[in-house]
Every structure is written in C-alpha cells, then in structure tokens.
Amino acid sequence: MGRLLIIIGLIIVGIGVLIVVGVPLGRLPGDVVIRRGNVTFYFPLGTSILVSAILTVLFTVLRR
Image (cartoon, rainbow, N blue to C red):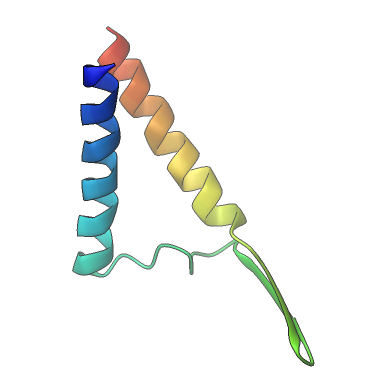
C-alpha cells in the first residue's frame, strides 16, 4: 500500500511539473471542444490517450 501511494504521489508531482513547464495538457490536438450558445462540451480525447500511454509504460516498467 505504501509503495502505491508513493507512485501515485510521484505521478501527481510529474503532472504538476509538466503544467508549470508549459506542456498544454488539456489542449492537445485531438481534444474535442464544442461551444453552442451558453453550453460548452469538452472531451479530452488526445490528453486521455497520452496519459494512458504514459501510465501503461510506467506501470510496465515498475512491475518488472
């Protein structure tokens, strides 16, 4: 349990560093934004795929 909490904390810190450095998480190509009047629909497809790929590689490396 302790190891999992450390990994989750490092992931959160890594995302924070990326945001501070200027990586446009949430505004990547492939993210869908539809604005109609007072309604805005936002679906971060590109960001979701990127985060999924990074987590897959991270967990594969840590599992070995």
